[in-house]
Image 1 (cartoon, protein in one colour):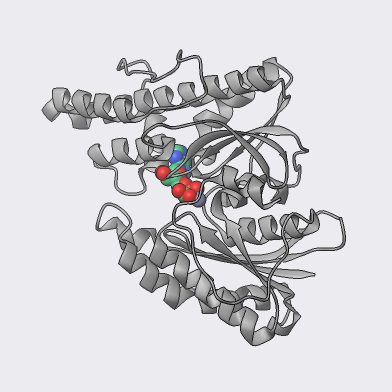
Image 2 (cartoon, rainbow, N blue to C red):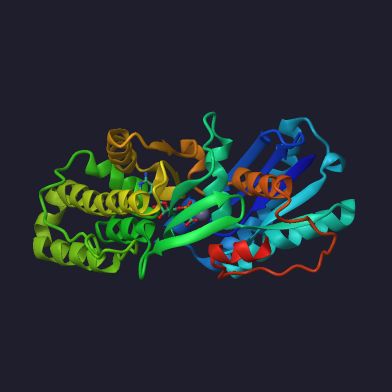
Length: 346
Ligand code: KG4
Ligand code: ZN
């Protein structure tokens, strides 16, 4: 079975082809990505209407490319998968519209995929895939969640952010330091030249006793510190970046360890864009090694949004019998869609 996956929830158009052989692990044949970062950079963040228009321009050329790269024809596609939500409504509609049009034209079923499930299952595309069950730390631009994952579609929310996501904390802090958009990678790079202990920043909810996060106060503390520095900010930027990164990472690592304690599980999967962060990987690896806990990450280039994770999630859903692809081409999208709701589809 050949699954074509289309991702268009935010500022990246991604298309991929995954091959499924019975119950064997699905194999990624090809994937292609177009990032809109350059286009949105001038505005300091994603402009939804521009994002939708660009997805329209990119999605078919990318589809042609992945089919060519995989050596397959469009007529060989068995299922067309697309990101149904959460994300920007207009952007999602582009992927959903194209997927359903392709499905209808080919007379093949379509399957709407949850974007966060795509991130969550993206480590299964790596050479060393995890085994269920595990604790998942989902850290993307819009979400920060700890989940207990028993299997495909079996997700229990353990805790989440009550305000900003970790990615947002990176992005907003970077923005006020003039580091552009998206700020996470730039802030992390600059942090390598600074001191993580230069500024005392809060570790919100670190000792709250639950598995929730809060990053809005940290962002305000970074803003206050930046204002206090005034003209000195430029000279101390690397120190402020390092201190900010250390605060975010410490909270993410400690809460993940608390989730392991609470569940008794011995395996962690980190997924989402912030999962590419070097310090997070270093500290989580070190802490988990002490406890003999295995940590799995997606391959670096598959941490941020891509079509491969959507095709993979669709393939794994179909394999597990969790969800059937449908021949219904009247589509809708779900801009707001809690991941835990997926369990109701079982
Ligand atoms: O998962 P993703 O591509 O998009 C969403 O689904 O939201 O995540 C994007 C987020 C952005 O906030 C970006 O700044 C952050 O991931 N990010 C990083 C790094 N690479 C991406 N944050 C910190 N360090 C990085 N190396
Ligand atoms: Zn994402």
